Image (tube, rainbow, N blue to C red):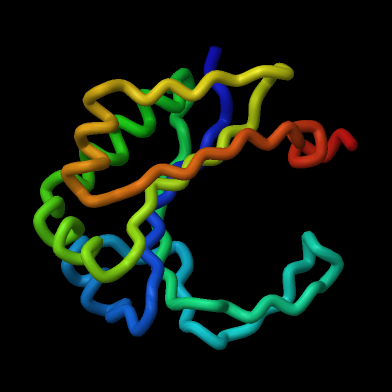
Length: 142
């Protein structure tokens, strides 16, 4: 079974050179912010959020018929040409592959193959995963 999933490369830390990250990876971030910037989170009733660190975030989502494992392999594989840059960067900042899945049923299984784990190590990244059982809400049915 395939589930809708979003997979992101999140680079966070203090005094990031956001422009250099964008230039080195050749990817425009979906979001980036600086420590101290504020925004209001409408999903939390307009709560004011103060960013505690710099962050650069870019990602992808599963394609039709693609499992989360396949999407992870594709996304991390696209980052491997930049492994040296990311590994060096990871000595001073936090690099994470962050995957969020929206299950079609009550249960979802995360499978990280040995190849995915090795590739995470190669780029100096950790892994965060979440399963959000809010499908009806996001589809506008609740």
